Image (tube, rainbow, N blue to C red; front, side, top):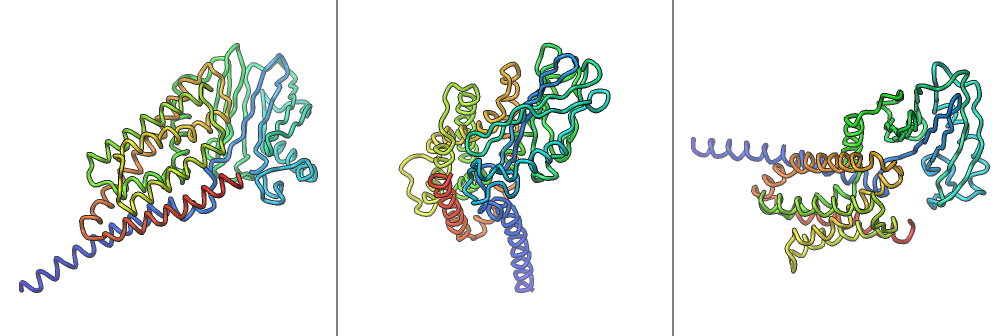
Length: 366
């Protein structure tokens, strides 16, 4: 009887361990399986700035040509004029088809006035929309995710009624409506909080960094201390970079992020810490903050709502991090206590290899 009871308990524990292992595997798969081909933060972005004057709307589009299939022909993450010219009409046609601007109906005229290719892969297109009546309200519809990928987001910035309003369009939220009284602070808060959550969910390098921290964290107390240190640090540099007080080159920042992940993973493997983990995490958090800031800096948000946008985006990043940690830490802790000691070096080795790949890609081929 005792033997049967012992065997039943052992079987029950084994089943529980297996369930926990599956949890770990599925969550880590989110970080690792898609990460090998990922750049820094795989959120595809474009933007349009609209200025309304009487019957006309002047629109300035900023597009990342790397998002358009077939434009970067040699896959070097740069688009030359020779590569772009044969694809130009297709790009313009896709913009015309998947970006619609209306005000009590469609415009009577849409004219492309200026095109400029700069920064190796960024295209600026200036267009003028003319309507039969004065524009008192505008409706913007973007179906760009249909051709540029499901994670594509489009920032719309509209100057109307003496103030600037913004909205973020994506695969689920395709239409925005602007009037002289629309665009509350709550809308800005909601949109940029969600953007921050999206950013951390697709920031495979940041998630890998968090996994590296979790693997070697012995207690909830030390985890809170480490994550708090990381949060404070990246919040500081996120603010400094977004307000253009301190700006570092993107290639340097992204390479340094990869190097920080390598350091954490190797430290987990050799188990030899000369500096307390939370102190190291603070230093690396400063670097990661510059990486987070790239999203807001590339949007070139108007300074009127920049503080609220920054706060909301940072809050969204923190929510994403907390959700990830809350889901992963308990299962990982159970596995460690149950004797799955090989999990730590195995995960650390995988993270180190991925980070080394990112470092080489960013430092030498960025």
